[in-house]
Length: 181
Ligand SMILES: Nc1nc2c(c(=O)[nH]1)N[C@H]1C(S)=C(S)[C@@H](COP(=O)(O)O)O[C@H]1N2
Ligand SMILES: [Mo]
Image (tube, helix red, strand yellow):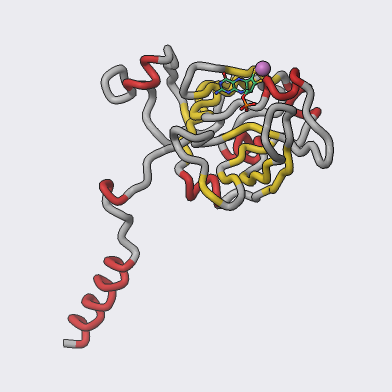
C-alpha cells in the first residue's frame, strides 16, 4: 500500500510537469538561421518550411524563438521617431545582441534581418556594435502583430531626436528570420 501511494505521488508529480502537448505549443515567430551555436529545431525541410522556401531561406542549423522565449530575454524600451511618422514610438523587446547570444551567434558574425515582405538589412559586426539595437515585439504595450509591424521590429532609441532617412531604412519591421554568416 505504502509503495502504491509512493508511485501514485510520483506519477502525479510527473503529470503536473508534463510538457505542453504539441498542439498547445506556441509557434516560432523569429528564427535565427545559419551560423548559430545551438539548434533547437530540425534543419530546413522543403515541405514543412514552405514560407522559408518561398524566400529561398534554406539552412541546416537554426534556433527558433516563440514569443515567450523572446519575452524571457532582458527587455529594453526605446523611443524612436522618423520624420514621416505621426508621433514618436515607444517600443520594447529584447536587444538584438541578447537574441543572437541566445542562439549562439558569434560577435564577429554578419547578420541579415529579413522581413515577411522580403526586405532585408545586413549588419556587419561593426554595425551591430555601433548601436543598441532592439528587436521590438511591442509598441505602446501592445504586441506587434502580423499585418502590423510584427512579429519583430529592429529599432534603436533616438531619444528626442529624429532618425535620418538612412537610419530609418535600417529599421526593418515584420522581421521573421535572421541569417548569420
Ligand atoms: N519590412 C520592411 N521594413 C522596412 C522597409 C520595407 O520596405 N519593408 N522599408 C524601410 C525604409 S527604406 C523606410 S524609409 C521605412 C519606411 O516605413 P516606416 O517609416 O513606416 O517605418 O521602413 C524601413 N523598413
Ligand atoms: Mo526609406
